[in-house]
Amino acid sequence: MTMAEAQKSNARRYDLDWVRVIAMLMLLLFHSGRFFDFDPWHLKNVETGLAFAAYNHFFNYWGMQLFFLVAGAAVWFSLGTRKTGPFVKERVLRILVPLLFGILLVVPPQVYLERIYEGQFSGSFFQFYPHFFEGTYSGSYAGSGNFSWHHLWFLAYLFTFTLLALPLFLWLRRPLGEKAVSKLADFTSKPGVIFIYALPLCLFLATLMPLFPPGEQNLVKDWAFFLYYISLFVFGYLFCADDRFWQAIDRHKAVALILALCASAVDAYINIAGLKPYRGYTLGSMLFTCFWCFDTWFWILAILGYVRKYLSFSNRFLKYSNEAVLPFYILHQTIIIIVGYFVIQWDMNMYLKYLVVVVLSFAVIMLLYEGIRRWNVARFIFGMRLRRKQQV
Image (cartoon, rainbow, N blue to C red; front, side):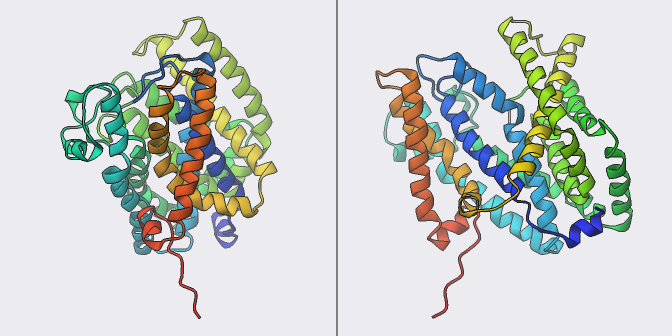
């Protein structure tokens, strides 16, 4: 299918909606497990476990990567029904407004509870709030400052990517761009070519990650993952421009799954055996980074391929959940930290603690969402389309 044909058949891709919803639910499990894995986080349980570390390591392969790829695909469909001006306005309302609101009201409770838990502040949240704007947050060191966008970094990056990539996206819809997409799609139709799309990911992380290590999601000290994520964002847009990209994914999904499983098994052995090389400009480190990127790409192709095969349909659950994804994302980490702040202090098995955090956090988020979805002011703040008033 050419770009023109893809534009004419601008039907909604329910499989991509399912990917977004499933990834969001798994992100809830991921952040709930951050209390109990081995890596530093805002709050930590005294006891940690391998099961949580393994799941979170696995999610890191493809979780946020899929969010960016699906977001790029969403831009393709949005530009198909809007001119440039209305499209930019929609992005401002749906991304920038929730980001600013989230920074001002959703993130501060996370920093407050961390400072309380670490004994770095004493007093009420309202006493702490003015201090939120003092300095820039960096890890658990209170002296570095408190101001942060925490998990909302995704929205900041997404908005930035949208503005930066928009000229390219618009060019790809012009005759020369359509011709370039068609040639690339024709090349991608050849056996195995879809796998080489991991090479840009390898290039950016292998060459830049030693200088810009992960964790600094601040747009200015994160060039390795900035270029890595924007590549996935562009791939998502590009793949929707010609159905031959998706046909290639369909044909290679089984091989991709086998390669993903094998590569993940090797990665697990390397980590358990303590063979992971130190990050730097050594051959071993750069090869391991490329290996990680290919494993990530294998998982992405496998997930996209099998979800497209088995979940290309809609139902009431998907319609409800798809609309809830953005408010859910904005709220989820703050609610998890509020719930977890109390739960990790209980004298209880850590697996039961985890279960309580997941269930209670999900319930609170959905309860809040039920209020948000019914009130247009809240819908606006959380980036949702406003409900039309029913005419009498």
